[in-house]
Length: 298
View 1 (cartoon, rainbow, N blue to C red):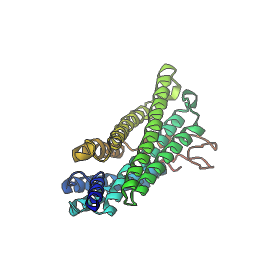
View 2 (cartoon, rainbow, N blue to C red; view 1 turned 60 degrees about the vertical axis):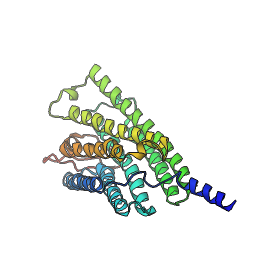
View 3 (cartoon, helix red, strand yellow; view 1 turned 135 degrees about the vertical axis):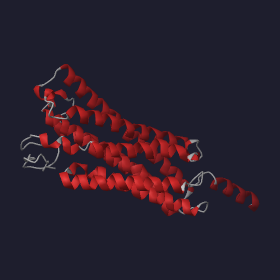
View 4 (cartoon, one colour; view 1 turned 45 degrees about the vertical axis):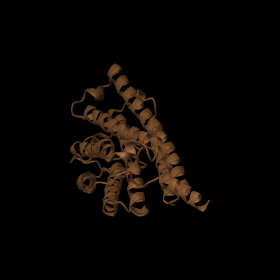
């Protein structure tokens, strides 16, 4: 009887494993270096141009760096992995895109303000960032809570944590999908009913709106991949093959970050001309535009 009970416990133990493969040291080190490069350059760009609304984006990049360091540590432990590095890489890589998304949400608000085209948006400026950042925070907290429960190390905790993470990913995808719809409808209405500032070739709003579409699509595909991964469960096909993580998560996020290195939002913020009612930054005095074309507001 005791032998049978021991066998059952053993069978249950294999229902959840930290990894279903030996994590690649090369892959972890490569993306640690890539994310360090793009993130540190973002830090330099942010301070140089005072583009403070990109702080969440930079923090997201730092999360990616820490996450891949965690994977490298797990690789060194194969096959006797410990909970610490696993939880670090799980939490950091799950949560980072939510931080990137927060800055992307605020970028759309700035494009609308630059064009003075609030009437073309289905959401007013005072609600635009509030709604999407609130959804982002909900997703962040749910995924963080799921990872926190998993850090307990019990089999039940691991499975419960997975379910909560799935809910958090659903929230992220719903809000992000709605955000893309809002941006698309704004673009469509601007094309159908153009305003004078939309013809100003000195304002690179079209360039940055297209960048917003591209980076949003990359993050959305990554989130859909993560959702499928967690729905399949710990023994699912995606979690048994590390290559999918690097193709549909690591690569897509690093591309999104590099795109913003090349075309930094500081290119468009000098054109902000909002007055004291500027609500996306919380700056009661409003932003100011200097002659050196560097944005000084939040």
